[in-house]
Length: 483
Image (cartoon, rainbow, N blue to C red; front, side):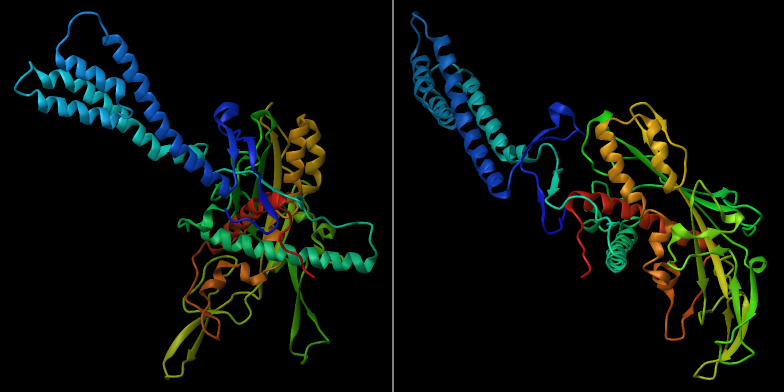
């Protein structure tokens, strides 16, 4: 795992609660001390092998030492057992006995073979142990604890002057834009079917698995959605320990869930033409879309949507897609990108072909984000609700102090988990459809009929990658500051 500047890996004793109090007991050493430990273990295992043979040979020697008369082979074996300091020397000397007494004594092979076998087994056993002694240093896996002098989240200070607050807000958005860009790149590499191994193991899990359904109803009222229903994405319950890597005992863990339901909205019933004195000619008009009002600051928390979009139990994000000069070489039936109007043009070589133009100036995609916390210790859970109400519902879960600390670290990440923050800083660059645009004339070959679902899924994956990123950043501290 690559760590930001200023973060440290905890060295010393700690418990990896994934493996329990006993098997999870871990000592993390620095690279230098780890190398010294590996070298020491190699020497120690070799010394242990020699000592083990000395003990075995002594016990066998004492057991065979009797007052009765014995032949010469017996006494020579006793001398070898008494004086050989290593198993390989003993095996070699026993083999020499076989050769020396091959034509003189009775059954020299059978009498010496057990000692040779024992010596060779002892030698091989400790040789193998010496080779694998280095595995002791990673027996508990490659998990480490991360700490930093600047751990925690970067939050805005409410007690500032208007100018300072504006500068802080700009800096915060710049930091979030950088985080979103990083999360978007990670999402495309690690949340698709193909995964790039090195890039996808920055976090405890390569990705957070989630499910989707395309058979859900429209998440808004008044028949405002087009006749396509809704598309729902569900992270299911995410374990703070197993998935996000917040090391804790079973009864100190927290589970978090995000559910996003999107649909394409109708525009004809919610738009109208108005004359604009700012346009160059009187023949041009301005199209206004009425889905609610925004305050001057354009902050999503201050919006006042129309009743059909007003949900107290969800954070609603509206995305307006203006196709502008984008054209297609085949008809697009996707409800958000729909383009079936034809235009016959001639290229530079004099060849005629048909282009497909968008059916409307602007398409609107709306998403409702809901969040949920659960206490795995007593199976109590909050209802799926908006980020602003979520904290009030948490009081009913009876979290202990450790769980409350974990929940708060997750809650600060929830604020940037909405669809709004997945697309705000990137705009059209957040769309997968932008990847296939080619040429200076912005011509696309075409799009699948479910492109709007592909875009919604990408935004959801970005939010999951951003969650992984924010939890790691909580341990390492913020990694990007805009001067």
